[in-house]
Length: 104
Image (cartoon, rainbow, N blue to C red):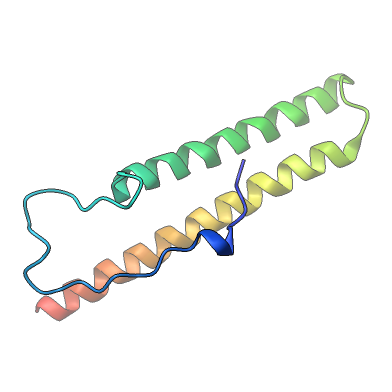
């Protein structure tokens, strides 16, 4: 489940000083997770929501669920999560393409 952002828990952004970031390994956030870890967890969460939506549709079709709003809610959550993930992907691709244009 997606957890709401707590504005009181926000950490200040620390500036990057040239030479302070070594190229010896991946950069980790305060939780000790790399960007790759966070991205993989996000993809798994979206997949879980898609599977929950599929299960809800199957249960509606078999009559196990009578409340249509449960099914619609599960499908909408999965759709929103997938759309958000696709927007993140698109932004990453755009950033990569911009970096490639700068290098040439």
